[in-house]
View (tube, rainbow, N blue to C red):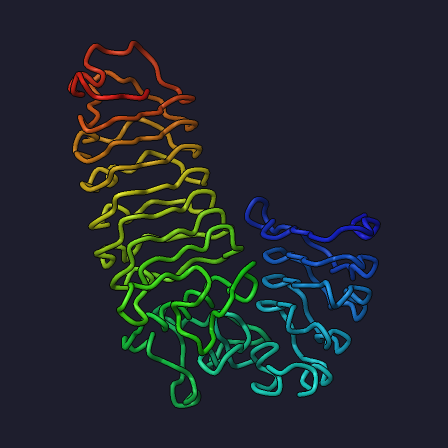
Length: 396
């Protein structure tokens, strides 16, 4: 039993529904014996029933950092016994019908004093992307179909946010209405990827310049203009918004080793984006990548990519480094590989590529190629890399 592991400090049983049918089910245990626990992540399952009032009752408040129980089927009332740690707990997207009055006492948390009960969970009839309010700019918005506390998604019949602007005058609608700053885009990114639970979110969603936010580098001498985002290995979840590609001076996006999805929709807007590092995430599609206008480096190793290698990769005329190894791609090789006229380093190892090298033309610019641990067959033809300059240093 988990509760017998008295020295346990970190427990991650999240997102089991993505590898099974419904994920973990049954009642929520109270973890009351885990006095050394620092983090629990149980989001994305089918845990049901009421929340035990003894939940984490023996956790050391000086050590405990976060508990994520979002996106389950927990119901009933959120117990008042959790008041002293409520800001470190996430119960969004459950079936919670009420909050104990003790939780909304302004003496419990500063955020409650500022935003009321919405600081814990958005009330029924409201929503926001995190399920609760953390700043004046992410107030809970009206949502006619939000039945329970903590709703994070509200879409109308057209697929757009079902927002009543008149009822939420304090909310910053600049992102919805199109008057977008770099700060607005970063804030939407923070909320979409559960920034509250990032390992390091120093200065995010604060009054300081965005150039001092963890992982953000700005263009020197150009105010709050984002040049690069480096948040690798930082516990980002969800899917970053397409608005990231509208950061006009973004040149590098590094989000490797995070349990998050990703979409390349809108990448055509990223005119200066040259480097993308998304290795060891949970992306499962490269659809849209061919629209990237300036991409030089693309690293998507160790992911859930499968099926044929997309031909649109050959649209990336400026690409010098392509790493798609350790996925589940299958053959054959994309048509027009030779069109990658700037490609110097190609890594496609450890996939399931079933193909022959006969007739495959790699670009003459190539200096390093790794296609090992696939299901290649037949002979190595005399034409293999024949066009490569004879004096080139080549690694195979």
